[in-house]
Length: 404
Image (cartoon, rainbow, N blue to C red):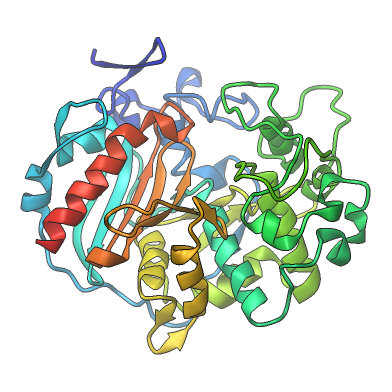
């Protein structure tokens, strides 16, 4: 059986770990050894997650992100699958790869490539189907960041204000004197660890408070997402270098909720899902108090994720309406930062900026070549370092062939 090795640990490769081949959740009922349940706390283990990430609403409480009553805005197509599949590139380790083989090597579940707004490539693997939402993980942050930046542009919130100005409950926490802009750009000095392979990391405490991971017997920690945000202490001064910590985004969403009176779910529906003419509802998992997790909780179809990327490529305009101010997108691209308003800014030859999430989620927007790539995956390594050495050269090679 073919294997993949990372940091000395061996995993089934992209073909051998196909959830259909392994028989997860098949049968009436599924055999005990093929069941994936929340209570077991193994649903994010590999290879189970190759099924789980396409079926999160069957495992945790969720709320719908409604697509609205209007018709879907379907993409035009201009198929280039043969050319793209045969594309070769050299990864960061010097290995020559074919585009189609690299999809298996990054444990891709689904991918849509847009060029000038048309679908030129679309493929699905494993448990994912075109109509099924898949976990976006931290790409959720990029949605939150654009809504927040839009509210700043509209004067609804002020990014120079500290969070305690809007949320008095945050007095005494690390967020008390952090400005909204510092939180949006993750330039906060928080005592919060995000090492996914460390079961004692703050990130997993955060997940248990949200109800995204089971709570152990006798658990007496924070009972909700907002409870948890209030417990964060400072590790250093705010305003330093970019330091990626998911809890920033949930604090940001709390401000948006408090000021607008609209939940993150409602803001997604009103400002993005319905105006973009999404094909399917999305959903987002919620804590025991019904609060959506803005740092990592959203699931969407690959095509609907691509719609968001296309909106960004078009500088926030969709069907004659400015859903995100063009100045907000320009600020993101021209900031000079590595991370701005919850997006990674590459400063690469394609002018790309991207949303990304653990286990290989990617939304790659390359304005200089009119390209958007939405790639959803279930990579065994949570951190981006597991797939970036393949993914980033793959994106550059794709951009070059589409612009030729």
